[in-house]
Length: 512
Image (cartoon, rainbow, N blue to C red; front, side):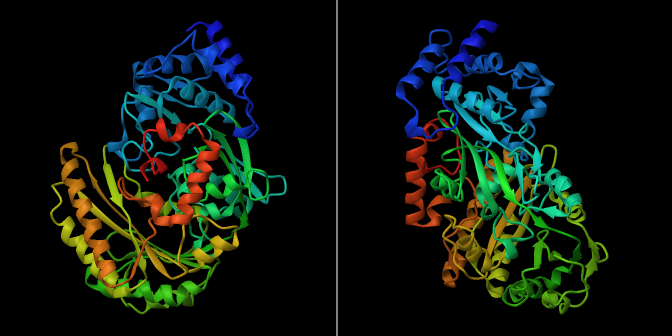
């Protein structure tokens, strides 16, 4: 497309406000921009045309990639964690900053082009952070900076950054933020979904520790939302409402001092599984009351990472695990940094052609129930096709996660202030012909497990977005009042329903 058309497009888009609310944008300004685009490039219903328009409008290396670009396009497509999510988009656009995202959103909305948004690509639901040839994949990978404030009290982090890069910047300064536990995971998806961290018992969820969000709205406006400014309702809405309002281009997170941890990674024998799961519940009742302690179950078997947020020797918080007796050390216990911990957990990431799918559910902490649920999982996954494997990871969550969320301004999850477990189970496989079989087994696992939790009266409605499955009704699990709030914020900031009508898929209010 000629440079002159690019200039026309940029001129049209430049007249749109970038710092004002939707209600303040004059209709005639929007109409003017639309009229400037339509005569030169009517791309309505034509994703290929939209891709050419994006390529001519945005400058820079790899800013807009087409399938005809060959290997470089494939490399960007393959950034999705699960091979099942690597869909053949009409093009991949890589904005470099919030203004680029604004330009992209204006073009997509004017042309009525479907789109998906990807930060790190760890979501394993096809179509959530990916899209086929009917639309555009908006990759936020180039929004990947971590900038520490001059007073070192906050850090502005791009959604396309990976947590390992964030910590590589902050830990040498003696600082951290409340973020992901696995280095290769992207910032954006984890932050929108809530985000469990090694500091959850002490600091709450990751999004409970956001000072401000920079957001590009459907009409291209760029706003900064905080707890106390004119966009405070949007700020609250983003603590549970996910991608229903706009695209977050920067998260300003509070920083906290961090030093060495006590790190103890150990595996128990399979015949200790029942005792091990009861020890998890015992820890939740006693040891988890110490906010410096945290645990992470590492795989389907009784394998665990014991962490204490200061140097120590066998902290008392972990007595329930010490009482189990014999175990195999994955590494000898040591005092090390957060970066050392990431080196241990990063191995959980699959690569290559591995396909991944899983779901979630939650229940009040109970050892007998954990054993029953584990047995269900083992039974169901025994019928997996050749080459497929199941991974079962309960996440023990302290009651303080709910109370801290309220203390830090409130979120929309509707959590109960009780010790509880949020499940992260998934199946990995490589043969696409097994997709339907894996899906059917997955549905059976979730149904049987939720039935078991209800039978014992220990079920919780909450569904953890970061590990939820395609058909799970995450937003409804927050409760009617919170759903109503999310809908009201979406109606205010996206009155044209761009993120409902054009966004490919996700945990969207259009499904409610």
